[in-house]
Image 1: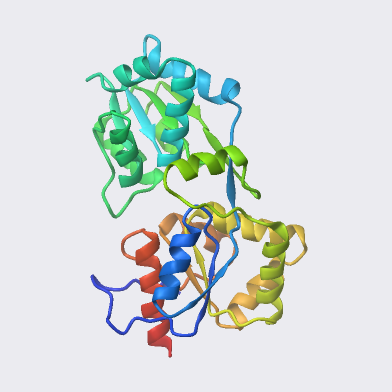
Image 2: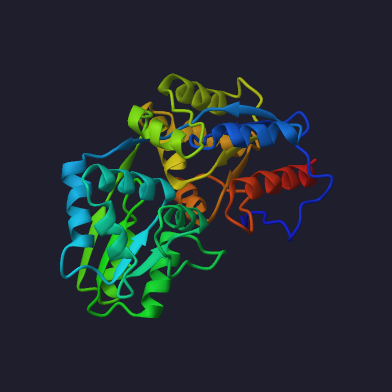
Length: 310
């Protein structure tokens, strides 16, 4: 099945009137819930993934050394705004924010942001951004394509990942001929929300809602057993999807939730192609993927899809 992708503009009749939409997001949970409500829907908030900051000594300090000490790097890749904020806070605490900023602003270092959000955070921190993938491909693989077009042979590459490694992207960098890859995870995805992670997100203007295992298990049971009306489930990241299905698997309910999604005609919306691939790898149907990978665009596209299905 090919997912629904709307045209360039939302229809004026695109509404969610009376429909229950599951919001699995954490970082922008409140924002998405508000949008669902404005479109006339009933948001059902069940975050499935949170973030926990990693050990600074093991992760961040070696990465900062790679960025600031000779011989330095040729490419510095930043996948998320949250990662940038955590890295800069750590650099400031260690007294190396100045040298880090100077190094990244050097003309010999090409700074790459995966999308507009890390680009804006880098700019806010006083760091130039040399390249961003096309708006239609703000993914780790989009970054790899950009790097390979610029040339990777013999280059030293630093990558500040999301909360997990994209192995396909790492393989692509190495296959492109990079001589060394320095990796860092400033935070990790978790089935609970760490206090430090919540503080960082709060400082960025978000109102994160952490996952609660009991709520996630209840949602799984409701989808599997049909004990609650659910019209759609939305996913704004691959980890949000994988965490839901991992929890279902651990409870022995993965097959049940997949059957529930299919047999009850629940619409599944993915924010972008990476999230779509994760869902499909788990065996889940995907009905909606917006043309622009953004939470708002996904929610409006879902309203248009459900409006067509009425």
